[in-house]
Length: 377
Image: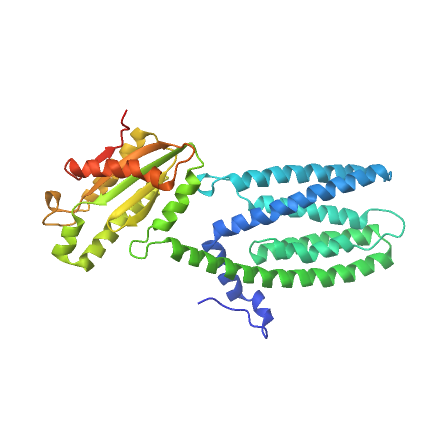
């Protein structure tokens, strides 16, 4: 049961229970939060590019101090680098060792903070107030999607650095006004950020749960047929697609012999073996329907796919789940596999059919075996 923040107890965002619950939500939704940070800060890096270019151009046109021109040039260069890095992060695959996004998020935030501090203390007549810094102290704590303790400590550190600099470099009257304004709005940003972050976390978690329920087969815990066709559409953008089709041998007879409850137990046992193979290889299993299952990958040769299919078949056979009418007296599976070269005009069904044909070939040749699809010349 999730803790909720009640309107009459706002102080709960500083409680031990809040930080414990927030940690659990972050642990459960790592991939979703990673993607949200990429989306948010990719857009911010684009804004930084535009702003940096305008500031640099303005410094040249209006002959500002050399220090200002150099700073805006550095800001623009960093914005360009961050834009490229976030672009790479958005196209990388989390499960294949993509770099952590969170340090990159803090680096971009630090660049923005440095720019606002520079704008605040940049020497010119009047020593203007820290308007840009104050605005960012409200906006950035809301946008930065990380655990509240780290976010709050980071922005408190930025606030302390700015406060020391304004009292050293500005006149006393301007520094005191800055101090009051930045203190009030920094505190506001921390409170709003903590509250909004928790609210977003709940929404992300609910969406993850709903997506899981939508795309997961309730009985086996594997991805369902809907998820299969969605993933095939994604993988069809790659040059090669690996497909394996599995079928439990004589499953109708198993159901007729032992009943549907025993049949459900059999499906769960087979699915557990599939999940073990998922952990060993970069491959995903789906329940296609009834006693049929599908596995997808995109990086294996036909020989490697044959090894995976055989290892899976042998793993099921080694369960030694008794079946009086089964091959050798226990539950077995048949498999058909293929490596598809992607071509224009292909559909999800056309990607599956060769492996399905190979599966039927395995069943015709005695079951409890795996067969590769061989294209007819």
